[in-house]
Amino acid sequence: GQQLNQSPQSMFIQEGEDVSMNCTSSSIFNTWLWYKQDPGEGPVLLIALYKAGELTSNGRLTAQFGITRKDSFLNISASIPSDVGIYFCAGRNYGGSQGNLIFGKGTKLSVKP
Amino acid sequence: DTAVSQTPKYLVTQMGNDKSIKCEQNLGHDTMYWYKQDSKKFLKIMFSYNNKELIINETVPNRFSPKSPDKAHLNLHINSLELGDSAVYFCASSQSLGYTFGSGTRLTVV
Image (cartoon, rainbow over all chains, first blue to last red; front, side):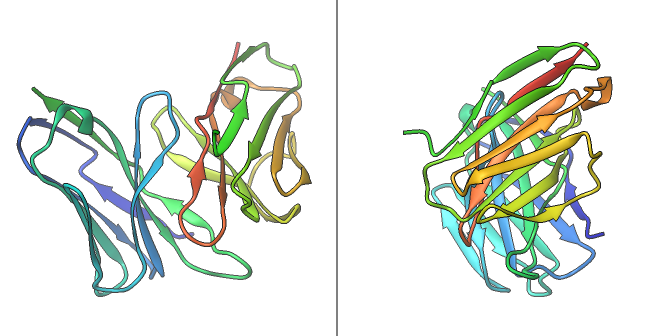
């Protein structure tokens, strides 16, 4: 089945640093999504990307849908302590009435004040 | 006001018991899902329902039986619980774009 490779698996950074994480897929996706999960909560959607090459920002977050449709990255600028959490990429390929959303294994972000 | 709510938040039970987790969404979405998150935080889809009809059933043991009485509810019933069923179970819903997740049910089988 389809698999997403998300890296890095974890990051430990200083407050104020920029962060970059990415996902690659063995097959093409029509949609890329980035989620953040706080402890004890469900994933929350940060950014959704629908077109190859699309670059979208949400505050300090920027994500891009790769031209090949097999990859995406998420950047966080000037990290702050509340950025701590697990970030998941997810890809979706529409098949049948509605495609399945497949998740990467997550990037655990720790921010040192 | 919660968009996707699931109950209970924590569930501790003995092996062999039968338990249910309930999920309700007030977003008017047509599709609902159950995901399982293991100890390594990997999220794997279990079931997908669209307008009360099952459309995805991944390789999940048949001890797991979803039930959708209407399109706002998708409950998960688990028979004969095993130690390996311990995980966090997330309900989610979607219309066409991103999924909205509940806050999860942490199931511990002892």
